[in-house]
Length: 188
Image (tube, rainbow, N blue to C red):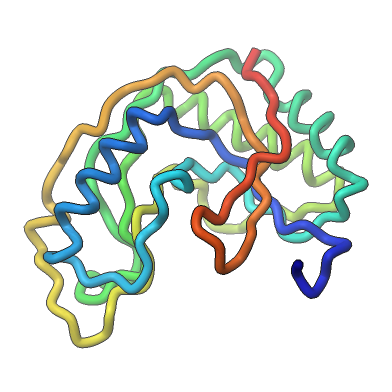
């Protein structure tokens, strides 16, 4: 039980199919000796974040789901691809290691815009930084460790899929996997 049980920590995301998650996990397992990150994301937790929301009372979940359904209407399924590797933060000590997202990225950006617009009416303020779709693989590079730059120059292909839904994830801090699906909306 969390300290603030009357609030759930939530975010909106595009889920990944099991076969893409498995390819990402295989690649990460092979890189763990070359990339010294403190925290590797659990296979079940791979996703593409559309909007981080923060805390919400569970009683407002239906309201959020209705907004998400409105945002998803008219977008239609998106052809996506997970490929390439990159990082955020200083090149010598990155804060995040990620896999790239390709395919119908313009549709994903439109979806992001619609989701944040609908959720603004519920009191959620969108982030000011530009939307940069990616799949987080690891966090917190260990200080003093050596980063093999060749890894960040690779362009592995993790596969293609049709994204047909958005999900609302609830975060359970300090659990593995840490994300639980508490709602979803089809891209129609």
